[in-house]
Image 1: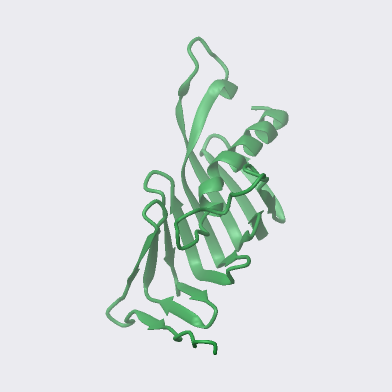
Image 2 (image 1 turned 90 degrees about the vertical axis):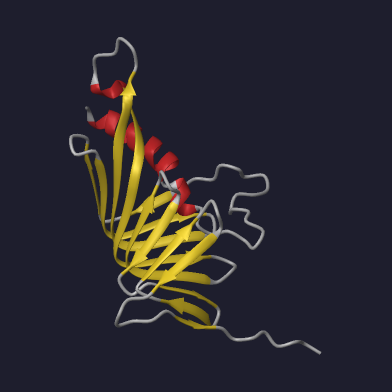
Length: 186
């Protein structure tokens, strides 16, 4: 595949495959970030290095990775997008005719997921987004914080379609949640 084909394919993958990960921020009513007149805003990804390996079916961003979409920002040291072919167009002979879909996205190294106006942040050593199940798994000292409230455990699984989360403990580390009651203003 030529460099121009890689760049074109990469831009398509970034728009289609990172969208679910970048829509992690949901309000209490379950609506996503996209609202108003701008229904398909761009995703901007910056890193020190980008590598596309069509044979291994992965795209790797390394060094100071920052992925931003509207009010959501993901920072990490490395982000790997794994994709799998879904088939070929009938009668096609070149590799550029292959369609691909994402299988998972793995962010590692000081992972931070920020939610703009809502002020929430999720942190972990590793975050894996599974496309098929539409879920995000945080491991390696995972914590989700909003304001002064936070929850932490051994593993945090966020089921995006269901707008629910599960925090699991280990034998040595129980689930810990600290919630500050909101004071009533007079």
